[in-house]
Length: 124
Image (cartoon, rainbow, N blue to C red; front, side, top):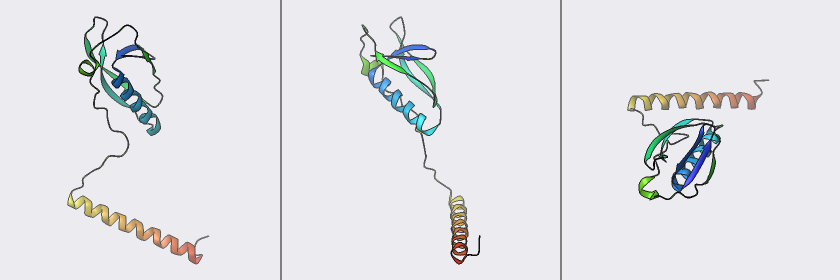
């Protein structure tokens, strides 16, 4: 079990959940994004509940072993599906794909013309 200390207090969760949260926070810091994540947390009365954390590029966590606390971590604290960060694949409709291809071709043509003009000294 791990205790996660943050600006607003502390929570206790499973080792794998804490590791996944730290990995996610690292990805956010490098992408300058923010996201909310739902993680299972051990409450003071021994029950578990889901807490939603806002994780951003400046979020700071201090993670340590939670002394004297034992639980069936795998069952009580499953690792949540954390949001995927970075680029995402998008499927375009045939019409949108045709427009995108046309736009890409126009862009490539413009770049070719600029490079040709630079090579010939037409631009200074």
